Every structure is written in C-alpha cells, then in structure tokens.
Image 1 (tube, helix red, strand yellow):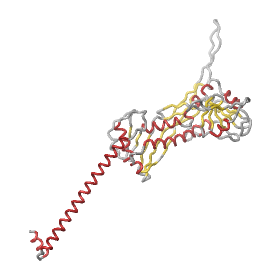
Image 2: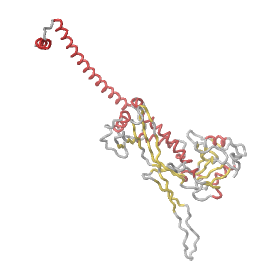
Image 3: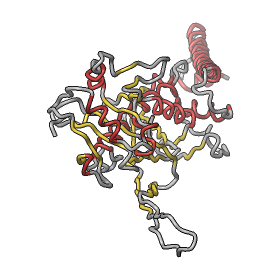
Length: 393
C-alpha cells in the first residue's frame, strides 16, 4: 500500500535504499515529537514539585509575632498572597475582628494583616516619641472630642440657720482632635519576595514603623495641624505670668541662647501646678541633654542622673527625661526644653486598624506596599505643659 501511494505520488518506483531512508526519517520525526512531549511533562512536574517545596518552607518559617494566635490558614493565605499576588487563597475565608480581615479588589487587593500591624504598633510605642508619655486613645470616628472642665464649682461656708445661696456651676469645653492619614510606601523586588527564606512580614513592619515613627514624632512636637497632628510647640506661647487658656506658658532662661545656672530649671518645675508634677517629664533633644548633663548645683553635684536599671530613663532633678530629636536645639530664643504631664496635656487619637495595599504593577519589577493609618493629636490641657525659652526675656 505504501509503495502504491509513493508510485502514485512520484510516478516512479523507489529503490530499497530510498525506502529505508524515508522510513528512518519518519521514525526520527515521531521520536522527536515524543521526546518534546515528555520534556514538557517533566518540566511541568518539576514546577509542581518546586511549588510544593516552597510552600513547605513557607509553612516552616518562624512567625513574626507571638502576641496573637491566628488560624494557620490565614497566615498561609497572607504569605502566598505576598509572594505571588494570587488572591485565590484569600477568597472564601470567613473572618472576624479577631482574625485576618481582607477586602480584595481587582487592582491587587487590600490586605489588613494583624501581625504586621501589631509589629508596627510595638515599634511606635517603643520609639522616642511623645506617644510614649502622652494619652493615646483608639477611636472609630473621624475625630475625637476631649471634654475639658477648667472652671471651678462655687462653694462657701454655711451656717445652721442661714439660707443656702446659689454657687457658680462649672462649664465644660470641647477640644476636637481630627484624625489625619499617615502613609508609607516601601517597595521590594519580586525576586526578593520569591525568596521564601526571607522574613517578608518583619521587613515590611520595620520599614513602615520607622517611617511612621519619624513622621508622628515630628508632628506631635511641631506639626501645624494641616493634614497632620498639631504639635504642642505650634500653639501660641506667652510668659507664664500672663498665661491663659489655649496658650502655652514659658519661662526665660535670662540669657540669649544660654543657660547660666540651674535656677531657670527649678523655676520651670515649680511653674507647673502641683497636681501635674508627680507625672511630669522633661522633653529635649540629645544636644540639649548634653548641655544640661554637664551642669552642677552650688554644691558641685550634677543635676543629671542616669537610670538605675536598663531601660529606665535618665532623670533631671528627680524627673524623667525623654529624648526627642524633634525638639529644637539651643539657640537664641529657642524653646528647647518642655516640662509637663503629657498624659494630661497631650492627647493622641488613632484608629486601631491599619491597611496595606499590595501593588505589583506600578513599579515593575518591584512590588509596592502602601500602608495607611489614621492618627491625630493636639494639646488637651494647656495648663499641663510649660516651656523653657533660651532668651533674656
């Protein structure tokens, strides 16, 4: 039959050698096709094994935070989503406020990771910021109202027979602290994210927390209140002898850009009302602290004393000192030292949730992680904070 077909195709008989050559050529073509098909299947099998091995390594990687006991399926879904951008593992999860919560969209998806958020909050609380001594509250609204009772209720002595007279009634004022959005946008290469041995969550938390800590610390001290918290140094400052509400009282050192003796520091301490002094803290920059640390009293004793145990703050005249690099350095007319009960005098309001948006498209071959949080801050008791001004008057 084959010969008949060839004869009909070529019009002539083929020699035995030609027949063998043609048969071998057909066999080689079939074999090459079979080999290519097997190589393709072997490659697919190898890729599946690689993915299984990667998932095994991911499951065995140490966890970021031990403070929360999360379901393992939620953790696996989060890690897989960070590495591949595949949100299939996130769909269908029924999550509540105590576990992982997600809201995936077509642009890459929002992913709220409680482990990363908790790590960021831990770093923020441990940072050198007013946050560590201020009053911090969690709110679910867009602002927080502080109710202030700064008037005295009337009272008087009464006799047995005399008629009672009406006394003054205290009034309540409200200070509204709006919440502003703080954001960070770190990035990592896709190749780095594909490395399953790398602690992605820890790296993200550290980068975001560092940026948030710097931005917050600056705003709580010097922020102007426009799209950011309002710092206590941003308010109007007046001589403490002329102090009134919505002003921050200050005392001069008596010399421009200098502190000749410890007397102004003593005056600063006692300019604060007695009810605030037990919880009061000094706030200054490192360079200001270096200057104050060298000062001695009339008997030659240093005013400054280091903490007696690891982690304890240094003390100045018996009061703790917090180092904040956002405080101005000593110069002519600078307000370089603050003293007060910041738990009463400054309130930080923030939303407890934090969102992280994964964007693998905008900066290829890098992946962007857009993290946001809502936070606000302002003075809540103007009588609880006093300043030292390095000036003659």
